Length: 125
Ligand SMILES: [Zn+2]
Ligand SMILES: [Zn+2]
Image (cartoon, rainbow, N blue to C red; front, side):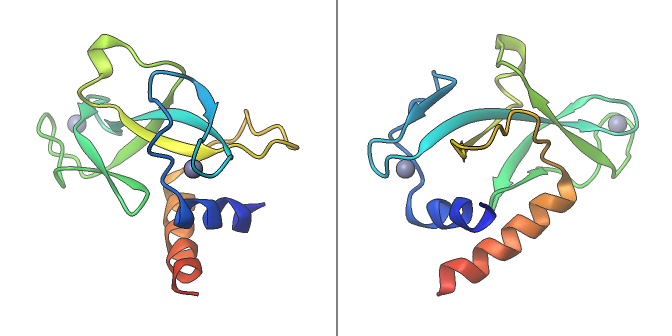
């Protein structure tokens, strides 16, 4: 399941799936793609931090929190995107495994690292 997911990511970025919908079938590869929104918050003061995607991993733009100076952060998954979060939220287009209920999956920082490394290996082949 994980490998299938990674292969999909290598072959197709699902760029024709609109971010305006929760999920849709990708017209380029046929995969069911779910739009997921994430926000990075400071672990110390909980403020939202501006972030970006780096090889599929969500990282804050700055190393330290501008509000409290802490280096630690966590990634929160948003159920739906709203106006106040739009400047901070990161969109990831994730392939939905259709036979398995993945709604309770939680994406955490360590797994993101793992996924990124696996993806690089997969892409080279
Ligand atoms: Zn696609
Ligand atoms: Zn802080």
